[in-house]
Every structure is written in C-alpha cells, then in structure tokens.
Length: 192
Ligand SMILES: Cc1cc2nc3c(=O)[nH]c(=O)nc-3n(C[C@H](O)[C@H](O)[C@H](O)COP(=O)(O)O)c2cc1C
Image 1: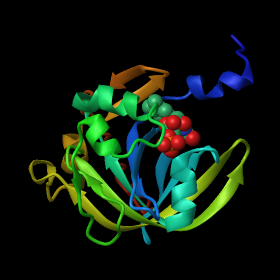
Image 2: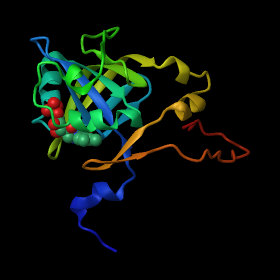
Image 3: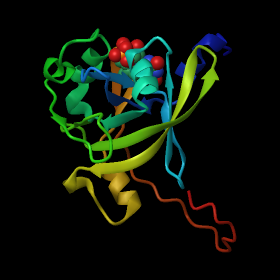
C-alpha cells in the first residue's frame, strides 16, 4: 500500500536514541535526545547527526564546536524523553537525575549513566531540508568497562540500545544473534 511520503521515516527501521551533552560559553550544560544519527566514516571516525537548526544543541555546537554523545540504555527511558522537553534549565543533569563527568578531550561533559560516551569536535555541516546534518570528528570514546570486549561484534552485542519509534514510544533492540555464512572466495575487502 502506498503511504504519504511525509511518513517515510516511519517506514524505516528505528534507530537508537542518543543524548547529546553540550556546554555553552556561560558554563551551562544542555542535554537533548536525538535519533537521526550514524557513524559515517571509520578513519577518521566521523559521526553525523541531523539537528533542527532551532535546537539549543545546534546553537551550542556552532558556538563551542564540540559535543558529547551518550548512548543510553532502556533504563534511562524517562530521562531520555524528559530531556526533549527541558528549556534551558540551570542544571539539566540535575533535572534529569544524571551525573556529569569530565570529558577527556573536550569540555562538554560525559553522562555517567550512559553505557557509551563519544566525544566529538565539530567538523562541518550540510543543509538537509528542514534539518542540518552536523558532522563530528570523534576524539575519545569511553565504553562502560563491563561491555568492553576484544571482539568488535561481541562488544556491539553487549550494548543495550533504546530504539525510538515515534513521540514517547520506544523499543528495545536486543535481538536474536545471526551469523551469515561466509562466501568461499572472498576477494572483496567489504568486511562490514
Ligand atoms: C527520542 C527522540 C529523538 C529525537 N531525535 C531528534 C533528531 O534526530 N533531530 C532533531 O532535530 N530533533 C530530535 N528530537 C527532538 C529534540 O530532542 C527536541 O527538539 C529537543 O527539545 C531539543 O533540545 P535542545 O533545544 O535542548 O537542543 C528527538 C526527540 C526525541 C524524544
């Protein structure tokens, strides 16, 4: 059945919600959730996030040129949703019951309760319809100790993403593990 193209997003699989933590020039932190994001380069590691230009997050990233991405697990459901509805609280960490931890390379704090924190420096941006695609270069990644594994697939499997469906509806993204059979003559380097 044909659906209205405006609903394209809802015909694509859900993506994991992230929390972007920023700190402005007056030392006030800001936290907000985003779901339109992805890793877009491995070397250098680059992450793209699609931001409405009206968000405080976008404004602060343009001002400070840095941001931290926290990857919440389903236990942070209410904090994630509430964070979309805060309008420049004096301390958004306190309001959300989250703990700010100093980042390694940048001033935007990490979120202690997140399973992964990724520190990014603003690299460039592209106008994308009603959003701006912001590209950040990853300068540090902190994975919770119990999730770290030398096998990349296992480490990824250890994550518990919080998928965003629509509005206040979310979905856990744990699934059945599958392993594709490998072609016998594999001359391509397309490991991913
Ligand atoms: C789970 C979730 C995902 C969201 N994803 C996006 C997104 O990818 N891009 C965007 O511009 N807004 C997104 N929003 C809306 C922003 O979070 C919302 O505009 C928020 O108020 C921005 O906060 P800020 O002004 O403090 O940056 C999302 C909201 C929720 C609840």
